[in-house]
Length: 568
Image 1: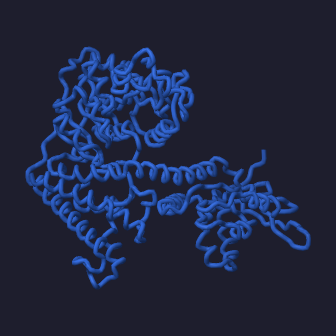
Image 2 (image 1 turned 180 degrees about the vertical axis):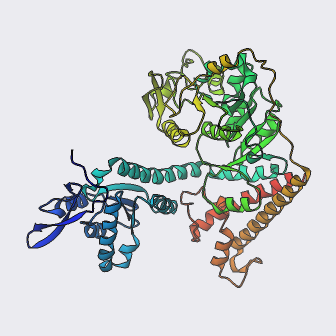
Image 3 (image 1 turned 90 degrees about the vertical axis):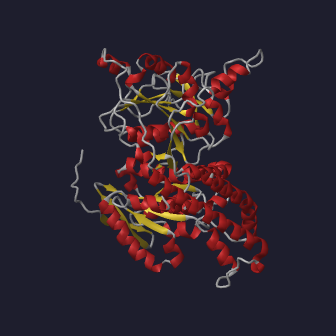
């Protein structure tokens, strides 16, 4: 096997092509282009590329940029080129070559091409995200511009996958916002009236010294519940809301519940838990009625479901204190909260019921709401086994962590992938579930911990005691909430007047054009339009403003109701 010095520099070698002379590159014992015709392979690749609007072309190992002119001439509108070179020496060569090439490029071409190297991956990530969030990009397409990609195949594959995931995640999030964005905003506005009396996630961080068990609603929860039922007090049990009925069936009252669901349907998971006074870790955008059912203390956190200026305004007004990543699943968010609750990394956290898959005929653990609902509608034509979920369109077979065949879906697989990416390096985080998809963390049952504890009296443990919010803090937060709600209410009323009466409106400011004044009032209030299919950016054309006008009456009522509840 040949060995090459790490400080070896790439060499340019002339290659004859008819009457012209082009260069190829010799580096680490291989030619990165053909010795005879460096352009041919690249030209064939470029000619076969799909030229669709909104495409991000990822040029891997551009080296001498052969074929770039042909690509730019065929580039469709709203498409861009991002080049990445993983090798430092080849990156320097690509940067020097591009500096010479771009002198003859039109300004439009220069604006649509960016080169990144091994030390600028964060800048590349930010660039792709920024372009995606503007709605400019719809897909990413990888193009190998030289054989330099063979020098670090894994790195190029990872970068290409990351670009695809960034763009794909943006549009998946857009689909979610179109369906639920209005409801998220409505719930958030209503929950602001509860902020003065509620705790925040950061108020209770590092307060739990017992091992924590995060309970999801998957099938693997059942075996864990059997063990927990005997030595419940040795653990701090943090349950997702859907797991409450199953825990109740085993006479297990969790120390806290995590709720993120915005829709009415989730209230059925709280049947049997009315006025149980269980502390609730509650997303600011989740259903406002849930705390009234449990009757216990609220610990707020915010999952930033969209990049929007109104989130920044809420933070500046101290109405949002603690944000967590938008992980998509309540089980992932509960795991994130558990890691921040434990007093140190030495405190183990076990997860169970986070299967992200299901067995044929059963989608959740027994006694969960999904299981009970199936029992209620069972008859001769509708058996208890829910086979439709296992064999419907979008369902697929997968291998579980125990080697058995299980069923999952694209969405649940994405949750498992996100779990692995987010938590695979967390210390003392273990998977206590015996079934389900691989989570990327060590598997460890809770029985050995109980055996190690031996005959320690399970009744001697510290309670999860929540200190109420101080009176002066309540007053300060109440003033901040009232000021924000009142200001937003007045601004929306003013905006409604402008959209109805135009230049004849009493709210008209003659220092600006009508369009500029409307745009100023709309700026930072994305909750009015983020649920529009094209709501990823503010527009002031007639069609967009008509839709905004249709939303204003409802949001004015939301702010007025939240103000009334806060004052009452």
